[in-house]
Image (cartoon, rainbow, N blue to C red; front, side, top):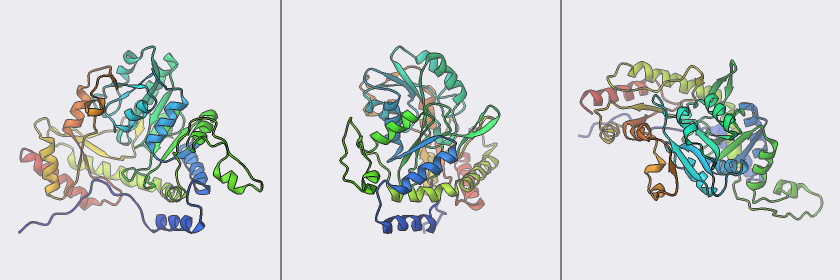
Length: 390
């Protein structure tokens, strides 16, 4: 007889009747595409992060594309970033006909190593694109100092970092408050805030914000909301190349409900991360994630590095066989076929840490609905597998 195990998914969005009612309200209103709900969601998100401007788009990849275009990235340019990120980070650079320049991650985490950035800068460098990987803020202060010395804009891939915080000048401030030039967020279902899919750009630069709003809607000179509300016949023009990167009002209505309880969700996730640390500390060879003193993560994911002797796929399969879903460590773009031609990117440092993180790290389940029994089960199952030589 097959033994029945507890089933633990790797993630689960926090959605209930509040989001369902918000979507229902919009559906019955008759206005379901980008409109008044998007405008309010942008205002709410700007207020939450402390950003003067927030612009909603269809997903974080489109946000990254618009951000890079806004700072002037184009053909012949290079953008310094990490290979160790979801492939959208590098792809957005290539959308601009520019070249991603990959540097390695830090020794004790999964974010870009600031010590490697300066050596990667060339006359072709147009921007630095840093990633707050898995919700953990990167060392933004050091990155900004390097960028300032070389006159380079900084774009933050904050896809995972909604609600994460960083200590600036003695104050805790949200990722997305403009420290760099532009920050880009994701609302994919794996993220702490979800709208099904969607994205947001925050900035302090009104010119950038105006560009985002123009480009996201085909560069239409008159928005559909303005045209709809006009008492006179209005014809729009299309003065430059634009994109269909809009968020819908249905998504925005869901996002507003998510944002309203984000602080509670993050508090739950932080407690769960602390619970994992308490249960897994002391496991021989297992390396647990930790926050720098200047960072507060939203713990979008809890990623551990397995003991050197462990077989990552075998450990993941053993966990899955006992009902625990996991994911491998973050991918590396430079190892993918799309980047194998030697011309699609430039590798500016050794990639040993990035490759090791992909091959030896696993993401454990973490979602707000987990309880102590779930944590006990995941931790005990992992310890059992590792003690058995996994």
